[in-house]
Amino acid sequence: MIRKKTMLVVAILVMAAVCIAGCSVNVGAPAPTPVPTTVQTVPPTTTAEPTTLPVTTTIVTTTATTAPVGKEILHETGSLTTKTYKTYDFKTLMGYKFLYPKDKFKITIKSEKPVLGYAVSTEQAGQLQGSQLIPRYQSYIKGGIDWGLIKPVMIIEKATDTTKEFTLQDVGPLTYVVDGRWMGYDSSYDNSPPFTYEITIVKTGGPTEQSFDFAGYETKEPVSSRTTEIV
Image 1: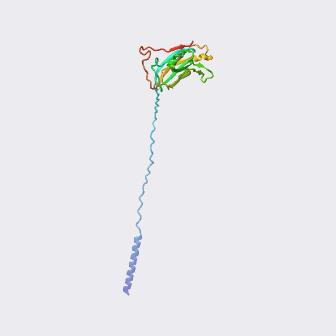
Image 2: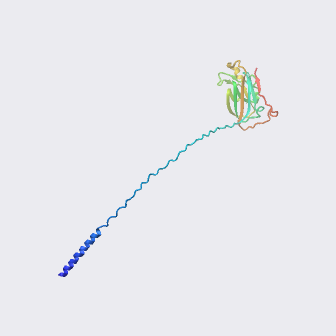
Image 3: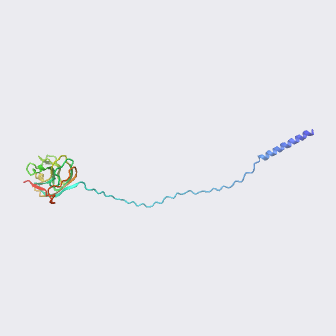
């Protein structure tokens, strides 16, 4: 009996010890004191704007230099009346025995009175002094000029300050004419005094090369144009 009591007491003590131990285990260690955290405020990074320096703009002005196109083969100042014309032979004055298709010319005529400028075959140019080959003013014709039997090319009608460019279509020896006779058939020009004119011919292209065996070349003397008056 005493032995049972002793065992009971021992069991109670063991249980008490277990309970005490459990309580000791469940009791956590005191939480560590939190270390104060220092928050460092970083100032925002300011990006410095680049310093704008004054820009000096240099304006370069380019002046286009136009190279002369072609070769001047005739430049003359003359005088005419309403009864005269002047001829300029491409062979004897300008050095072209024959002209060919695709030969190109720029012709400028300045005149105090409106004159006709045109080229004809050298053969026909020799016939202009007759009464048949005279350009006449006709009011019913567009442009007012009746060419009659004349077969002109490179025509400039009633020129006072006119420049035109031409390309030939046929081959042949040519003569250029500045003609004031048409005004003799227009009463607006009755009793007109003599007047001056200026003609410039520039060859701007084409296959024909200038020949130098023309009149006046060997002696270095200028060749005058021929003025013909119709009486």
